[in-house]
Length: 329
Image (cartoon, rainbow, N blue to C red; front, side):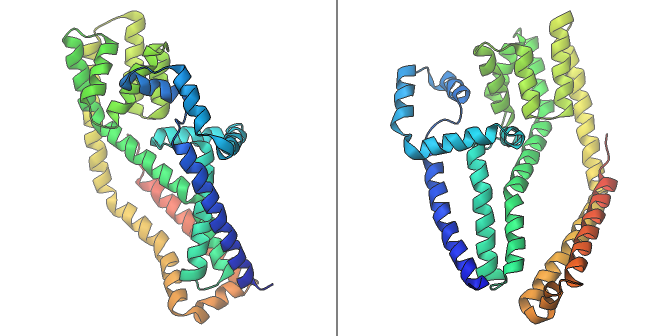
């Protein structure tokens, strides 16, 4: 059996697997991802009966849901499953670990199919490399989504503290001030503080709820705020004045970070160009002249070691440049 026939059979099997996974995900998406999330949602929409909840769970499950639940339980018991669950929570992506695992498989098959039939024109080696890239594509997306969400939260934090200080000075308690923030603040600040208030309403301690907030939003500025709140709850003091000082400090740090980012923008762009230009140039040359670049990948004695050494040096150079322009404040 030729490599082309193997690839076609693999692509057909991949399409069938994609259809199966999409069906599982569609069934799962109609149900809540977690019992705690369902209870938190009912605080906004009104309480419902647990009997109705059990009927909904039994009516839409079926064999596909049972298979997915078994897969989810098997993945969550692993260390990487727990890590994935935390990453999805930080990015605020409404997927469970089983759906996230299926997304890796779909992305890998999709990258292989496009590379084999469209980009590299039936080159099995480069298509496998493209599938390897597709395996990490969901992780890259989640990482970027987490970074964007964290940046928005940190940019909104000084204004959030301003709302908090004004609420405290108006006579609100700490929890009432956080509830006011959950109603008036923009996203994602409103969602995170709303979840803190809802967790406290479910019986979780304020300290634990704030620790959960810090676990979802790993921010040094937020850690400073939560530490101040916890200390004030233990020893007392004027929390409004403390938060006001912290707010001014965070504003100055954000201003300084912006200036540093502007000054280091040239180095970061240089790193992206140095790291990406050889790869894109190789792909471009292989597309227009397959015979010219094909010998590099066909020669296993000299070609493949050269490719590996080149990629390794590109990665090392990119890491060094990012380390130089990454300045801690």
